[in-house]
Length: 330
Ligand code: SAM
Ligand code: SF4
Image (cartoon, rainbow, N blue to C red; front, top):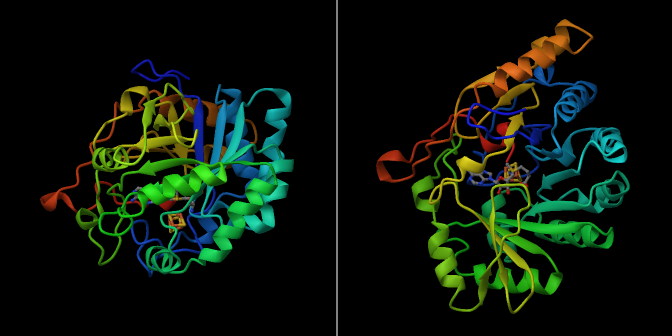
């Protein structure tokens, strides 16, 4: 699948549910309205669409959400998709999770062929953790991270840089990840979805500032590592681990975009930061063979846009796109 700008689309992210057991302040408002259950694709339908994408050249699948591991019977989907790893059609099956369910599922994920997992953790301070996630249990997430490591999964920690919240402990995160053997990726907060009373301008911290501050304590060496996603990497000479920077705001990475995103209702977004989308639910429900689905996918890839135009400043603190990250899948 080659888009109009010559980019090969080889990476599909799937939000398997928009629901979550946390309510992170930059992601959701406390009183979220979730999608009606009747609109949600079944696990069999998700498998069918993911498998069609694999047939069209997708080499990497990431299940995300919402919290992917709170979807009922989700291990069935991981196990089912594992067949594409066995056949060699897929290079990687992975997930992004808040870690709360990993004590339960880490071993089963490894058995299904998952090799690495991204776990979101914005702070090492239990009180701050409660303030950021509203509903999260810090100790449980720590157990989840340990369970992933014990199961032999590679762990990458995702940390959203939040001004006045965790900017004083980012260096501690580097040390903690170094000691645990985890890579670490920092993310700039993006203007997606209404978050109630919180203001994204107040949260937004450019990663250029984070990097400058880290360089006071650590030797950061440029790295050409490519994880197949949007992060740019450095390695930390003192710990030997990598740090990634995902900078949608300060550096637009769209020119190398290889991704599209599927929601749990079968809507395909060709860009995280644009409203244009294609419906894949109607074509799969209209016919048992994949002719209509294949045509809808080809048509959608043919209008993948050049990039997003996120801005966060005082006059632009409203969301750039109305849907939440949990709908499109981060
Ligand atoms: N619930 C899982 C988790 O938290 O890892 C997976 C879904 S979550 C939407 C995926 C990632 O998106 C998380 O690392 C989260 O911190 C990040 N995220 C959510 N809202 C964001 C926003 N507005 N800007 C930047 N990152 C965001
Ligand atoms: Fe849930 Fe992940 Fe959003 Fe936090 S960032 S509310 S854990 S979906």
